[in-house]
Length: 365
Ligand code: FES
Ligand SMILES: [Fe+2]
Image (cartoon, rainbow, N blue to C red; front, side, top):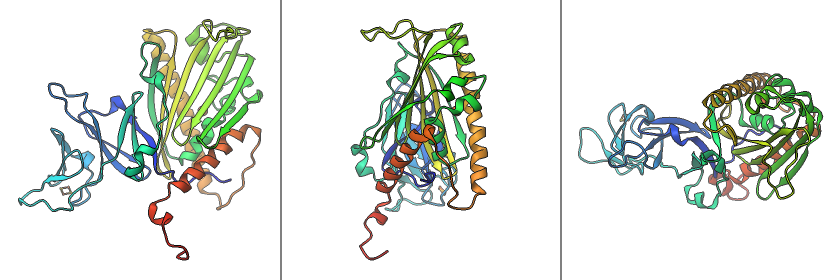
């Protein structure tokens, strides 16, 4: 099965971290759709309102609305001043009283959850039918300390899905950071829930070297028990539950696990265009709360790891673009999770086809 190129529309996607959306317009292109985001005013404060998502093209001459400005809760186009309310309806045009009836831009359903801003791309009438997967640790600052960021990559989003579902690349691409020989050497198990669109890939290493990412943050010296349990909720949310403990230390029979360190590594994979993807990444830990130095270390170290992936995927996409159509790949055991993800994404993309294509009368094609 080839790399995924079609988009799964009629799905929720992470557009931004909640902290990125405020009283400045933010422009992002999601599944080829340019969208302007902002937060409405709350009386007496300048932040804390609802997130609004409008098509980022003025109806007048297609100027990006994200390059304009806010006036209260309305958006004023930066070119000739057409002004839109939160529903996308134009409420003012310059030089005349009558606002043309067709003067409106699309607005997108938005949900803010777990500190992430999710936007629904596709038919807005179907937005209620799509469940949004949870990442509660991101907003649970009492039990988890989180650092994160976003790196755009110049590749199709399928390459990032492949990358994250097979962590054996840590050994080769991230050696000296998070990779050790055991990651590539240890077989993993894969479980696929086709109906729910979830792929689970687990790799439990019982006796592994501790990479700098974990030795420096946990202080463990010597060899470790390292568990990696991936949960990919297609198309957008990827959770890696990482458990680190001194070698031989296992969870207690009652499920308690006080002698281990837990790190939740969260990615949101949001396609921008067919050659561009937003890579949102976060690292949440259940130890060292309030330790700013540790937070800075984990942030900078993980950003470096993400940039290693960015460089590799930019290079890989360039190489693939020079290949003839229908090029061959050779898949092995480590690719089981990635291949399952491709199957699910292909199905979601087929379901989410634009209604015009889906409803074309029989015999017209
Ligand atoms: S392009 Fe927006 S007002 Fe002219
Ligand atoms: Fe990586």
